[in-house]
Amino acid sequence: MYKSSVLLLMGWIFSWLVCTPVVAQSLAQKPKHVVLIGVDGMSPDGISKASTPNLDRLMAKGASTMTARAVLPTSSSTNWKSMVSASGPEQHGVTSNGWEQDDFSLPPATTGMEDIFPTLFGQYRLQRPDAQIGAVYTWGGFARLIERSALSYDQKGESDQHTMALARTYLVEKQPEFLFIHLDEVDGAGHHHGHKTPDYYQAISEADRLIGELVAAAAGANMLKDTVFIITSDHGGFGYGHGGETLDEILIPFVLYGQGVKPDYRIQDFVYTYDSGATVAWLLDMQEHPSWIGKAIVSGFSGYPDPAPLASAGAQTVLAAPILYPEAHLYESAGGLYIDKAAEVKIKATVAGAEVRYTLDGSEPTRNSARYQKPFKLERSAVLRARQFSGQEQSPVTEAYYHVVKSNSGQGIRYGYFEGDDWHVLPTFATLTAKAEGVSYQFRLADIPKRKQSYAIEYRAWLKIEQPGVHKFYTYSDDGSKLYIGDKEVVNNDGAHGTILRAGEIELTPGYHPIRVTYFNEAGGAWLDVFHKAPGKRKQPIMPEQLFVELPQ
Image (tube, rainbow, N blue to C red; front, side, top):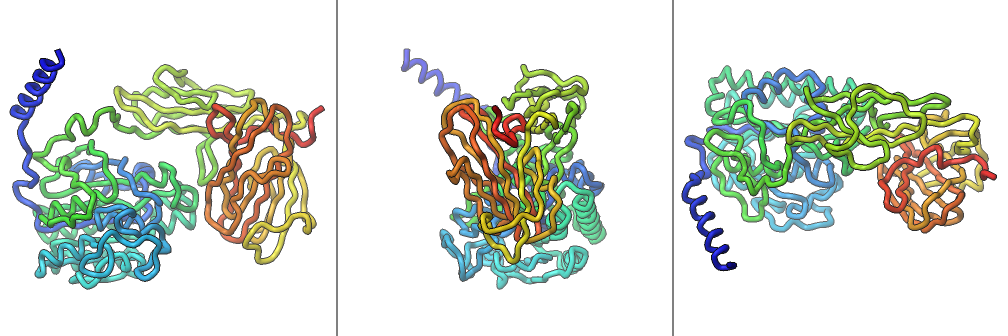
């Protein structure tokens, strides 16, 4: 029985191989020119919500995916290096924005034309000594990541407009085999104004305009028939920054346009930022360095099939998530605080005809969960999680936190507000005198009047615990924070830093436990969130029903 089954399986595989055409890894004619455009900090959300007529046109006439992924950490240096070296940080060693050629933690797996991990620029120069190779960039930090001696044209623009003007002139006059362009001002808008804000979307619209001008210049020089454009990004963003592990930070666009590209095609491959470099190498008939790990996204080109069934087994195309109201804004989650009134839940599908399914207990929404049909009210706090379904496709889960409190219930958190000078770590609160005191209903900074820098807040409450066992607590803060249960320090997230999540565990019995959270802001951005994960439950904000100003009798 076993032998006959094996023979049957082998026969099926043989017949499949015989009947399946073998796709040679080359286009009928490779392009003469490849232009890789990287827009720093441009997210798929940004493309969907900003006015981007040029990118819309390129995607309609080309191949694209909005679910490509950056590498971790979602910092610029790490991801630009990954993009142009077809490798991850494990290979190239650029593990943070603090990396320098003479100052690093992880040495590269190998070096190439210069004493750094090999990139497209150096590898192509070694194989094509006569080629025109250009790099034009707004962010000067990009230059240290590549072999500048390999470049025929090496320019830093003073602005994105200047960068693109330099790139247009070089593209038309020299018609290089390979040109890399870096635009920086979308990332700047995300840091200064916040991601998912009108200013951020406007910066993406401006980048779209510049990309349109470049493509028009190539058309005017009669280059389109021989050119492939790749448009992508290094990372997205969350709040005022990036570097973390959220979908908002790691999802990036990947767009192919030009000679041989399939029109209006949604790429089915799993695409990662290092695949951009591998795709460039494949298009240029460049022999990849043996240390590179990226794969060329050949399925985006005419004559190449979708990924093999085994390559995408179990995968479902990811739709955009539904929108929960009130919408998330910067670090603020969707939902909100409702004092002496019910919360209204409103959900909007982002795909025509899609079904939205949701849960109210923090569990995973499935096709069998409650179906959203119209707005409804919540009389109690809840964690709402939702996703949308269309055919076999589904979206990621999105969630909202609705905090519903009664002002006369005894719920709340006492706080003290303090000011100091030149704090770089949490102060010793016992030595300070509060400038203001009050009661809040959540561990949030927005509820407390404060100045912009060198301040600290101490929160105290009684925390209601219903389940015995090991409980996990988190602080998510910019700058430092700590969390105590009784006299025990559970979470240490101290220091001057960007928005970072830290966690700790403690075993608790049912009842009321004193909780203390301390926070300080050195300068610049400021944020605080506190989360709790009870045994067998999901991580979620500490709900108002769990927090009391005085020990309940």
